[in-house]
Length: 155
Image (spheres, rainbow, N blue to C red):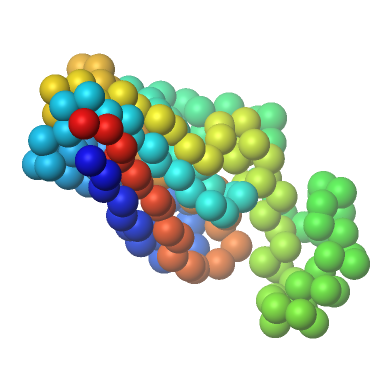
């Protein structure tokens, strides 16, 4: 048995955290998956899909990230994206120069990853008592929506 869906999230010009386990978990239960695997994936490089147990842990994580990977405030703060990348993005994709100030988002995503895989047993995602799947959009340079892909495969 298979299930596949794409969920649109985001849209604001600020750091965003969304709980995702409700969509995938309820779908898995409703479709009677007994022994399966649920994969949650975000294809953009400055976002993250992660598993945590409380929002307090998420806030602590964000506080630590701000200390070790400060939010990008100006060009030259990080080596990326550099003047050539900015020039090409403006010419080829009609992007604004300030949209390149998202190096912190890319680095944070590298630490956390862009996917999670969760076993499903007897129709329930095995997230534990407090477990949740979160989508984090670390890119605060512009408003835009993102696609989160959920796939469930199994019996």
